[in-house]
Amino acid sequence: MARQEFDKSSKYMVQKQAGGILFLGGARDVVRYSAKQAELVQPRRLPDGLLEVYFRGRDEPDHVLVEIATYPEKRVAEQVTDDVMLTYQHFRKLPEVLTLVLHPRGQVEVTGRHEVQSRLGWASFGCTWKVVELWKVPAEELLAANDVGLIPWVPLTKFDSPPEAILTQCRQRIEQQAHPDDQANLLAVSQVLAQLRFANPDFIALLGGKKAMIESPLIEEIMAETRQETILDVLRGRFGEPSVEVTTLLRAVRKSDKLSELAKYAGACPDLEAFRNRLLS
Image (spheres, rainbow, N blue to C red):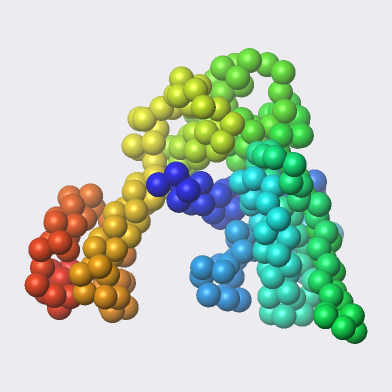
């Protein structure tokens, strides 16, 4: 579930806390912004984030593509190039592009540059964009901004203080400054991201521990989707690919006890029609 936790956490930050991401990219004088649900491509190929941003003194919005990479990987350049081309085709305007790289690994570097050339050399195109490596960003810069939406990124930034002090400060900021509806999710996301850097569970517990994870609607959603995937895998193994209707009905189930019941029935039902009827009951 760890991979899905990270993916969902990144999506949450783009959808709900994009102001902090724009700050990391160096954007100032932002009047307002909204995360657009990009209809450009199939959902599994969507960019991590497409923001519509209004800057002070401008009537027209700018579009900002955000790609979040856990580690520096060569495939990031291809992903960004794909996103830029799709966005340009849709808006007929080149978007601003920001890649956040969260944690170093090996010698690979995301350079913010990619060029493609045809076999005969008759055609070529290139793309350049902004890259921010979180481990090079001073923690005090984010803390001084006084934006609670930046706090989940702080454990991945550069600081000389003991980790315990920084993580405790992160938790206190969230508890004191975040809207009550956002506190549990921000604490949970902070824990997920902090695990990229800290293996010590005692450090992670400073960000709220299991209580924060249990209370987070985001983590509840992740757990539900994980169980849904397990049920679908059982059904595929027994009967082949479930219909779109069955999949859609199952995706709508969020309650833990109902999913537990369906998991048991998926291994015992006589066919997909019986499982569909159970979903409708």
